[in-house]
Image (tube, rainbow over all chains, first blue to last red; front, side, top):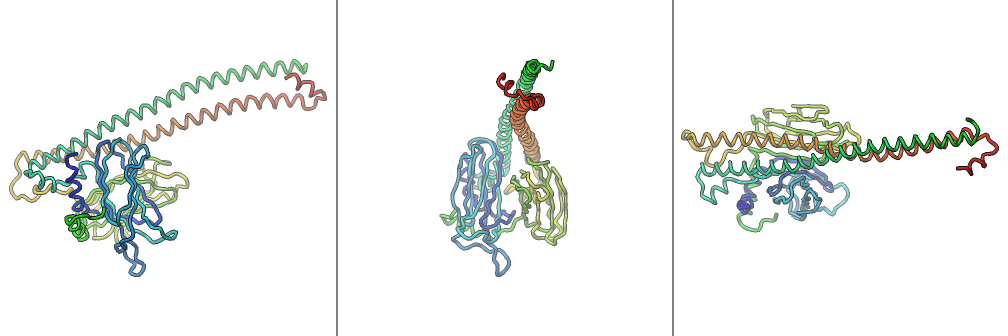
Length: 215
Length: 216
């Protein structure tokens, strides 16, 4: 990606709008799933605050506390796993399309349960992840050129999504065909088994009754 | 990421002073059985906010959703809902809670997608500020941009629908395989047991049981 350095540079500017937050326990683990096409950049910002018992509010944690971030690709291979500080930015580019799992958990070594953590999180995918202010500045684009650049990025995203859609459609079709095959062959084999069993039962019982002199 | 240069340090400082004005976030998360997940968002007064959600997989594809204002007033409540979209205007500034609850479900965990759009989309730098009337070229490109956004939205919906169906198909495939194996075993067992039982009815009282046993 040509724009990669700019995404990196603009990281902290983008981070300024992180505002969705949730609470997790210190020992808990929170995962999010991003279903994305290949070659798509995902940028995520987060900030952790610690519950303060004295004030009843949330304060920035002591420097020792960090977050473990783990990103898994659709084959469950870990493509990113490291410890960040309590505030940071994660960025990765997908290589295979599918469900990427992003997990966050604190690196606390402490007690069971622990205190509450407030995590501010923001995840941007594909063209959303691009900071156009930075692009304009770096490449000296006029307003209109910048607009066109944005349109190009959007169209690229749509194309990626569509080719991914095809990929998934194929998988879907394979599943359906497999189901079809299984149902078909199984109904045949079930019929066969029933016939064989019925035949065997009859013959067996017949010879049995004959031997018992009941018939 | 640990700030390593001056720029990012300034950025970091800048970050802590910024308030959220415009935001759109899409999240897909797993909702465990008997659990409740809440997300909070600081929303400025008079900002229009849209929440969209859909249960992608799990159980009966339903979830309880509640939106609560900072004054603990319930703005929206849906019980066992599969998907919906709700738009509201914030009456007060403060943290709004969006809660997804799976408390009624004892064993099925669910995958929930949510899209939260707060306020309008950020204008491109430089474009929102100009006072002159936009040229036709600019208006057109603005329109194209909005249309593309719509396309992306539709794609997302399509993707979710497809994911839902695909997962259901995968489940079905799995169940068919499992069930056919079980039933094959069941047929064989029933057939053999049937014969065995029937034989026993006739042989039990017989004093010459051993004689017939040797026959088979």
